[in-house]
Length: 262
Figure 1 (tube, rainbow, N blue to C red):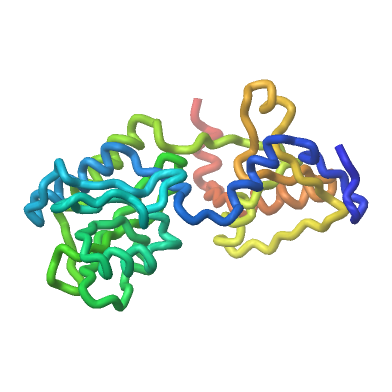
Figure 2: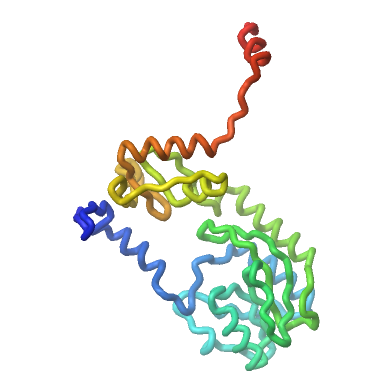
């Protein structure tokens, strides 16, 4: 435990878990943090093979940790069907268009249109739960079709079925924990903001915390880190949480009926 230059104690200093957490934000050129569940990929690949008459045996997946798609092997007659790093989508599309390599790529739904000649934008907008638990609205881009923008209801339905199978089995969602009033996370504050609740905590009333002692014993942690609050700040946090929880009151008539029962 160390004191930082503002006089605050950093409870995650010297914590190797925090170093690993920081590495997640280092610049990445060839990897994506949202790895595709196998059954999601199979649903997409089956649809591509049927829709465009492509050979499933010649599908290529060049996007994986440590790989460089520019130096990957692209055999004659192959088709790239994969989920690339979304931040590199523009340069990846340009590379395949320039090389004349057929591709069908996952794409962020909200920024689907690319203004690139020869690219078909498939507006599916299905929210996919990826291997890390993130739910990302996803569409697709390809140079296999001849439209600029189209929908694909059959593709949507196939991916939705696969995603439902994953989430219903409880394998792809992050655990949800309940924390004492002395802990606040960014996710909590974001939910309060949605409901119009003003909330803030100053540097003198909190320290960063990677995991509660009880979590460490179970090998767990606070996802995305949290703040350990002073008693005063904890009371304000509790008030914010209460304000965000809508509880319908009983009317006097309903209260009397409840009291008279039994």
